[in-house]
Length: 403
Image 1: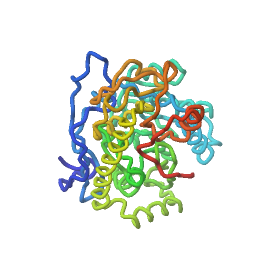
Image 2: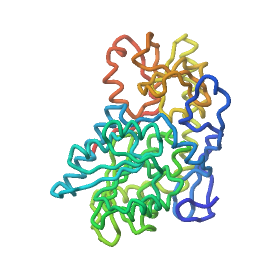
Image 3: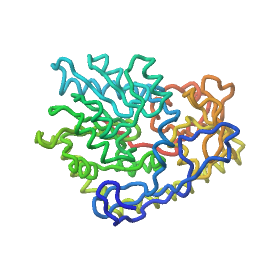
C-alpha cells in the first residue's frame, strides 16, 4: 500500500492486533459466527510520520448502517455544548445569519447546541437510520457521504464546518479535505475534533485502534495533511473527552492566521517526547502485549474466586480489546449498554450478549469497564453499586486532562 496522506511507499509495520471483525458489526443471534474478519494493523510512514491502518474495510460496510449514537452519554453532550459555545464566543458571536455544517453529524447532538446559538444548521450523515433520528429531532440532516463532489453540489459556503470524531475515519481523505476547503467561507473556521495519538499512546488506549479509524494523528501529522490542501491549524487544545482529544481550529492558509502559544506548546511537547517517531510506536506495541497478559491474569483470578463479571458498556472500541485479549463469554456474562439500538445483539467476534442497563435484573461482582472514557460519569452514576461492594475494573485508566 501507499501512505494515505503523502502517497509514499515507505511504510513500516508498527502494531499488529491480528484479524478482527469490524467493531460496530453487532450481531443478531442467527448471525453468530458468520461475521467477516479483517487484518487490524497499524503502519508508520517514514516520510510524513502518519500512523494508519494498512487495510480498509469499505466505508459502505461500516458507515451506512451502524448503531452508534452520540447523544447517549451526558459527558459527550456536555462536551459538544462547551465546544459550540466556545467557537461561537471567539469567532462568530456578533455575526448575523451564521451557518454551520457538521460532517458525520450522527443524531445531531453537536448541531443542536449550535442551533440554540442561532446558527442555520446542516448535518451530513452516512447512516440512513441515524439521519432519520436527527431529522425527527429538528436537525436538518442529509443522508450522504461528504466529499468534494458533495461540497460542489451544495454550492454553499459555511461560516463554520465541524467534524467530531470523523476526520480520522476517511477513506476519501483528500476529497474530503478539498470539500472542506471548497465549502468553508473565506473567513470561516473548520473545527476538527479528533483522537490524539499522543494521548492514545500515553494511556495505552490501544482499543481506539479499529477499522473505522484509518488514521491516527498527532499535531505534526495532521498539519502535514492540512497544508497539502491549503488549510492550516492556528489553535488547538487537548480536551479530556475520549481519554484525550484535540480540538483544533483551522482556516484557509491564505488568511495567515497567527499560531497561538498553546498550539506551539503542544507541538514542542510532541517533539520533545518523540511522539511521532517509529520507536515510540514500537514501544507502544510491547506495552499492549504486556497489558493483555495482566488483564488475563486478573480475570482468571476473579473467575477462580467465582466472581461474576459483566462488561460495562458495549462501545465499538471495546471489541478491539475483547478480540485481542480473547475475552469472551467464558469471562464476561453480559455487556450492559444504554444504547437501545443494541438491544438483543451480541458483540462481534467474542459473541457476548448485550443487555440494556435499565432492563437489568441482577448485578455482578465486577464490572469490567469497556466504556472507560466516561470513567467519572460512570463512577458518579453508580455510587450505590460501589457502596454494595461491586468492583468497577478499568482495563484502561486515562490520565487526567484539564482544559
